[in-house]
Amino acid sequence: MAKVAFIGLGVMGYPMAGHLKVRGGHELTVYNRTAEKAQKWATEFGGHTAATPADAADGQDFVFSCVGNDDDLRSVTIGKDGAFETIKPGAVFIDNTTASAEVARELYAAARAKNAHFIDAPVSGGQAGAENGVLTVMCGGDEDAFDRAKPVIAVYARMVGLMGPVGAGQLTKMINQICIAGLVQGLAEGIHFGKKAGLDIEKVIDVISKGAAGSWQMENRHKTMNAGKYDFGFAVDWMRKDLDIVLAEARRNGAKLPVTALVDQFYADIQALGGNRWDTSSLLARLEK
Image 1: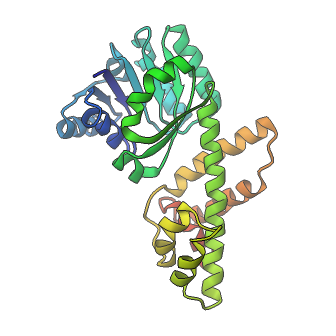
Image 2: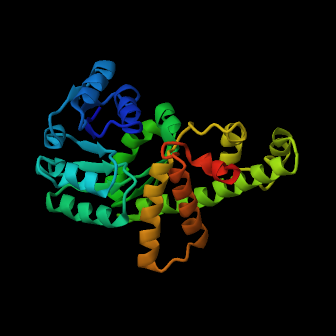
Image 3: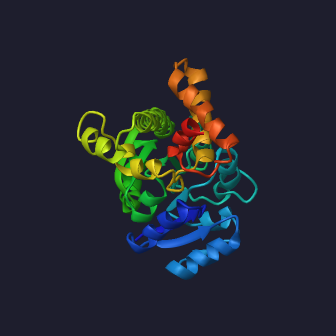
């Protein structure tokens, strides 16, 4: 059993922290910007609450965070009453936020100045993956810190991998989002084409999903897409945030991402339709408007 803090109890962090307490058997202290959410979690899972990130991190072996973006992450780490004010030497800070590789490197340096460790560890698998404890976790950082943290992370994951030095986890998550963007657009176009051609979409998917066209998106989203229902997972607003990070990194490293840039603009069209909180499969709605 380790002493663990978790900062950020959103739709992902709330169940992830729960797995650390229940599956992992760790002593948990949680912090959330809305204190009522932290108290609800503590009542449900039996952990402790903290008034600030600094209070949460004080004396802990491992400190997790899962917040909104780079600025949120800086706020809970190096900001006023941030976790790095009290993080103890030798502790490992594991960040599950999808953020930039740049902020990961910045916070790695800040943690090392405190003789602590920092691992960027963005996740894939969505809300359902967090609730079921089957996330994929892509890590960047030092191998010794990763080896210590891996068994703790593993309680809410089915795959935990060290992708390279700090920032490599975020870069891997960017590739994940690049691949998803193209897949969802292709699936949306396929379903749209099939409808226009007068085909039975269920029969079509039943056949082609067994071949080279098959994917997680096809298997898990084609029914709801065909029904015009888009409230099953990762929101368009979140995807646009992630793709903004991807495209900014591509401008830095010179990568050419024409399809990703195009799909990002298609998601902007979905936002204009009022679909900010629709899930990412709502690309089909743009074709059918």
